[in-house]
Image 1 (cartoon, rainbow, N blue to C red):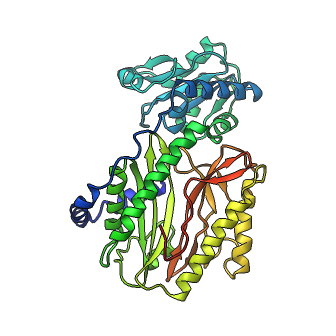
Image 2: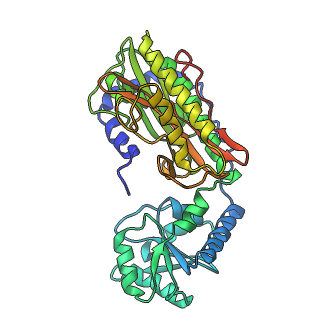
Image 3: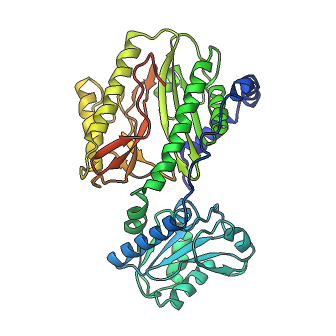
Amino acid sequence: MFATRRHLLAAATALPFLSVAGALRAAGPDLSRLQDITRDAVPIGPQEYAGRLARAQALMKANGLGAILIESGSSMTYFTGVRWGRSERLTAVVIPVEGRPCIVTPFFEEPSVRQTLAIPADVRVWQEDQDPLRTVAGFLTDRRLGTRPIGIEETVRFFAVEALAAALPRARLTSANAVVRGCRMLKTPAEIALMQVATDVTIAAYRWTHPRVEAGMTGAEIGALMNAATRKLGGSPEFALALIGPAAALPHGSREVIRVADGQVVLMDCGCTVLGYQSDVSRTWVHGTATLEHRKVWDTVARGQQIAFAAAKISAPAGSVDDAVRRYYESAGYGPRYRLPGLSHRTGHGIGMDGHEPVNLVHNEATPLAAGMCFSDEPGLYLPGKFGVRLEDCFHMTPTGPKWFSKPPRSLDAPV
């Protein structure tokens, strides 16, 4: 849907294929000592899906919606279990304010779509010479919802919205955020447990990878080691960014190939998926001898991370967490605000089934923090032309405040 950091990293790490393959061959004997730690992870079950549907329908009633429309993607998976990619052929779910949802999909895809369908639902198909939004409209009309407000999930593509408006001219199409965000932003214990397992995998993979980083390695080779460990530990790698030296001052990397050398910063940003839920952890260290400047910046970022965590209080605006960090950084001479040298990106983002989810820990975000919300805490500092430091751990909100998924590192000398 969007050009995310995951897509950029996949393209970047595909380039030096031969050297990556060589690194993996060399790592083979060490990988044999790693064990799958995800075997006890519990997948989302029928009761959880039923609860999601009930909450969505309650929120629809509260917001005056007759139904919501969701295309294939993580929100469809969240409500129905259906795992399906997007193409020019629409597959979508319509959730009515009462009764069973309806999956709309191409005729020849129906058997495949049903393989992951986890809830009781109608399935309506459309043929290649038909308009799929007419099928959606038909379902809504049959349910007597064709003149009610219809909520559109925020990632639904324009062609679908335009065609549905033409098929149901008396319906008002509006945002479904109050329903979809209202459900997905508040994670249940089952979801948090899966995110914890995914984080445990990433931390274990870091501990395996860190001592194997050697002088002369490229970022792609380091990332390949991290991904290999992640797979052996039971996770599905999402991204493994390794930035070296001056490239670490660019939060999402550089096309320039830089090799590890003494005194060079190594910044890694890695995550994986376990049963549909993600982790996101960043670590930064210096290969060999660290300078006083390295240590000062690392310690400042570590303090910024703790300030963000302490500011994450129930009912506080999400943006206040970002504001607290920037006040501290500005007092230390960075910025102001998003200027460099300093923190050029938000302090954190929502996380769950997607690596980046609403809402963000960013200035002016007024959404109040509530139990069940999950965020990254990653207030990096970037010094253009020199290096950058990012420490990232995720936390979830409990009724009494935030709780870490992974504990931040102790020091630059013990970075993982």
